[in-house]
Length: 172
Image 1 (spheres, rainbow, N blue to C red):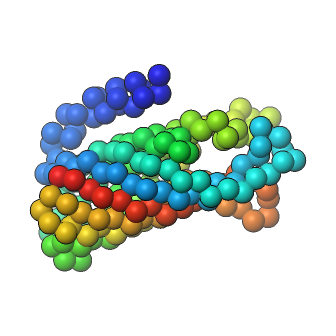
Image 2 (image 1 turned 90 degrees about the vertical axis):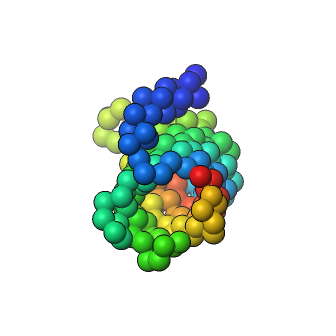
């Protein structure tokens, strides 16, 4: 059912993708450091490195000669989540850019059972930050590296967190 929702979101975003100067398919291999409470139990805190595969579509909108807006939608398996993100990309050369942005993540993984604070209802939806670099090797192929901080780590409190690196390949 979650894949159907992701597909419907992609279909609804199709008109936006058609306005883009460039639309790409990307695949990432991600290594996430995930801290969570086992079975929702506040006493059994776990810290795991979890590998995940990400598949998505991104579109680039040119804002100026050296600045682009990149919107992406995708799904992850291994540590299951869906995301919708937007990044500002600064072109350093015609084939290399750095980017920084934010996104909304719907976390579907069974291990992720958030605890509500002060009687609040917990949510599996989260906002996160990401930063990375993209190198266009050819006109049709690119390599990327990025850091995702989906849920920030708080040292003072035993809170849940998701952070990690992703290496990817982009096809045009």
